[in-house]
Length: 346
Image 1: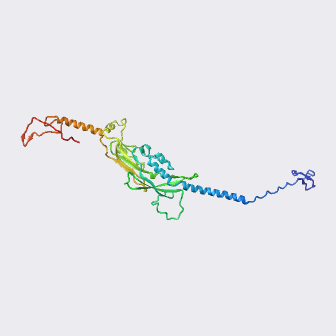
Image 2: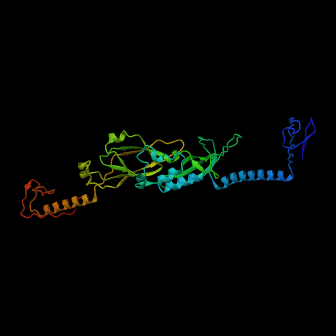
Image 3: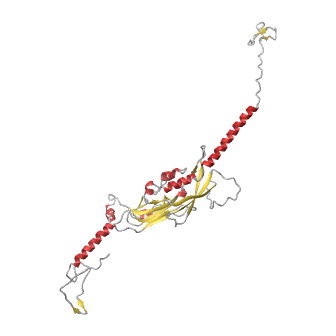
């Protein structure tokens, strides 16, 4: 298809910019406008289908999160870890994960492996959505305010007993928070304080002791200067322990007279709202003479008394018996003395 020059009407190629006859500049060829796209019903259906799929995915994600996760999940995991005295597993249920970093002589696995008894009958009572930092007094009472709950935070009430079934029930509230990322957003404990109490230790007994598996300072002045030590809720045994003969040989020698490793006391640690005062442990007595020492001393006493009984004197030397030499003011003498021991002292 050719074009015509507007000056001389000569024919020119479609791509030509000047007339081949008169060299007149040819006007630019106008391009036809692109055809307008029309929203056909198929395109509308496709877009609507995509929107429906996105809505269903978002709804499904929310439903799956509600069905597959619960605010009580991390609390149940923490209760199981506490029952096993597993400090690492308990720490893993917390967002902060700072249990092992706390400055306490009692927050160590070795402490929990010796002389520690977890709480009994520890279980989740109920839960509700709450604002961060709230500590509701009674979760069974609905909030009077007509407000939309924050479904990313919840308060879980936990009941437990210390020592035995006859002990009173202690209640504490654990705060949990939903993860901000992930297809299924799990719940995590935000504060481990409901599982932590304190012990105020004073050792007035001149002997090495342990609480759980942690050594207690021997001298009262040293132990009295200690700040209360954080400890997991539960029961801790206070027991005697072997001193280090290289550090204190005199104490090590003296402690051979007593039962070592014997539990002489126990302390109960709880955590509740409001937080209780630290559990106090003041050890003033409780050492028991070792059975081997008792047997040895008893045998020595028996041997000494038997030796005294063999004497034919009225007043055997260094013996706890003697016979009367005077009767109603009159002198009495005898040539035959025979001692018989009827009962040995305890």
